[in-house]
Length: 464
Image (cartoon, rainbow, N blue to C red; front, side):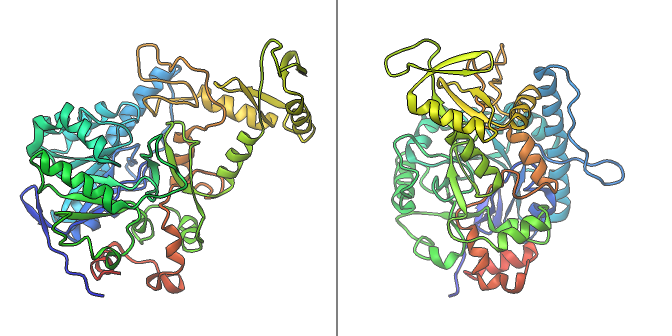
């Protein structure tokens, strides 16, 4: 069916109410966000470890030389700023000044505020706004105001936005571009599920967005657009949301569909994998070193993490009630439950000979090779997160969370960099929204058709 999309006025310009969702580690880059803006929407450049280029046009590999984590963290920030500036300028050139460009930042990434300042200082006049989630970005409005750009906080509930507004945003209301409601069950990447919400029971987004709109009206910002993000595939499925007086002005963000375009920088292998996905191939899980839930492709990487956590037993260093079975592993003695000892000995026989302690007084059992890989990745940490469960890094004076590093997680920087630059789609973390299986059944992609960004935007505008 035909959909009538009304343009919205943002930053003094009329644009389509269509936003390209930000995807970090070199995925939402200038080559794809520039054409999205050129088509009249809002393109998004990820400011999370974006690529920069050598004189010959090749991607500069982000290699770290610092001896300490703090030294490597400084290198990370430099890479982040330089790459993001490069990609913003590339996107702007491609856009021809049409549409708008946002940058996307994860608030819990290492050095987020310093990266934001560095990028915005060097891209004045090119960037319309900053989209930011993965945490509670209280200082986002203040930073945006320093550079005269708009800000687009990502929330998954009215309650979260209310906290942001009352603490900080009410002082910079004029630069609030839109509020992004990101569905915590359907969106790809990191998700904002609260402890009170069941990850296996997706909620209806309509009442949650309506609650957000009602709050915004009470706060006097009822005409600021809300961006529906997560689970948006074709607009004819959202026709009841468009020009809905109860919901007010609504925009739509597409994160997964832009992965499959000619301009998308992901590998051809990754693109072909998207075309072959089936329902249930995306898993909402909590292995991320951020501590957040995240949605990613079920593959060998995720399967290994699942198996790693399943090979887990509780232990005590001294005998206690119920923990009386003696488990001797090398020079270490642990006290475990009798049935746990039997499991551990079986895993040991199967080649999982290295027990690793977790912060929860448990042991996981991995192979010698996997144990060495985990220890090396933890040692090589460059502080890509403000707090990391996997390495125990924290962006504070002591550079530590004060907790034991958790071997059930992984180095997110390593795996996302690898898959973004042609690494295995099966052996790396591959984020995707829960609608990604629809590539295989959508007639637009029949016979393996991969559109340009312009063709995709035209298809979306048609309602399909």
